Image (cartoon, rainbow, N blue to C red):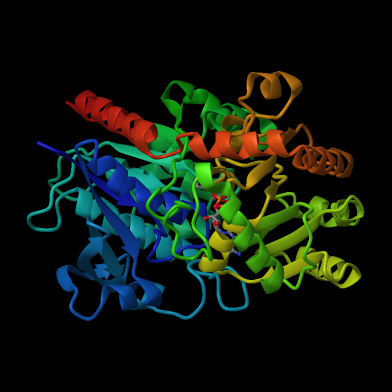
Length: 486
Ligand code: ADP
Ligand code: GLC
């Protein structure tokens, strides 16, 4: 019989997306179906999700008071896979983002919103919904961090033990709240310990998940190693070390149906590794869209949150150099006000050479990958990173820092790799002005060696970043944990 897994995530493409978590939570269920695992996804009922679900969605369960709030569970589909949506209007029925109000401030009751979400998940996993039983729960990030805590410390009455996995997509976001919220979480007093949900005197949602899940995964092997250090562990490195025999690095894959240049409906011209010339049409379209001068020099692109993590402050400072050596930039992103302002200022200084689009635009992100020559990703840390994988698949050569998943997925065009014909991009060692300026210079030089550049593009396009191997790795891990549970 197929393993039945409940995947718990605060976002899932195409229902709701703020970043890579949605791409992963949206694509992994289909990848696991191919491995004989039936994944049911649970997501919060934000207005956008309820709208996509439609009015006909069936209620399969209700709570009079889920951590104090009425809620119901709606059933639908995520692609071809089963979907459950937690409709709790007091918690999720508001305008704004999944985590923040329209002005960008985190919702004050996020602890309540995501504790209730986790409580619901533990009830569902324990068998609260007629006809639905689960062998394992896969929780993603701090928003689902309390699921393993509820499963272990306050399971649904009468349920049998259900093992859990927590995946860390980003250690920088931990869901840390003051001690005062503890009594309202519906946990026994004994959970208030360092072996439970307590963390540095408060409640740590991610910490709780890492403490109480049966396995911890993160989204690349290199990041799995990095989070043992103070620099990347962000206060939780001790816990990572203490549980290191339970920590696994499993690289993200990409949804090859969604991200395929041969069939991408967003592109002016589709193409394959064998017909790269067709990309030129997409580049011309981008130049027009971003108001850039038309020439044969390299067009760099960015599709990113504009934050410190992504090294975007450093990039803003390197643009005069980039333009000075013949490059152009088309940027799509949003984030920190200061960084946004720095890019707008660079665009004003370099009309026709730097084009900036502030905002979030899924279709434009595809057009950028399909027409840009190189994508810049100078992250200070990067648990996995998906945009370099999309770049590789689209022949948009990644220029990246050597960290996390960027280190694991891009082969630097050093002389040995070029001679062996295996390079796929450019890596830099440090996220500094000089290192990034040098990486951009290397990209321009290589771009001008047309045959070598074409080889970089085709190597990336032919590499396999589909979910196959990683889906199998998750399935193996699930199986082990279920057997262990007995
Ligand atoms: P992170 O999750 O840390 O932001 P990832 O590289 O894992 O980084 O995933 C980012 C995802 O969000 C990718 O699918 C990327 O294309 C998308 N994305 C980021 N910024 C934008 C934007 N401004 N408009 C459209 N898509 C974006
Ligand atoms: C996080 C990370 C990113 C990763 C994504 C999906 O947002 O910042 O590196 O690719 O999660 O796992």
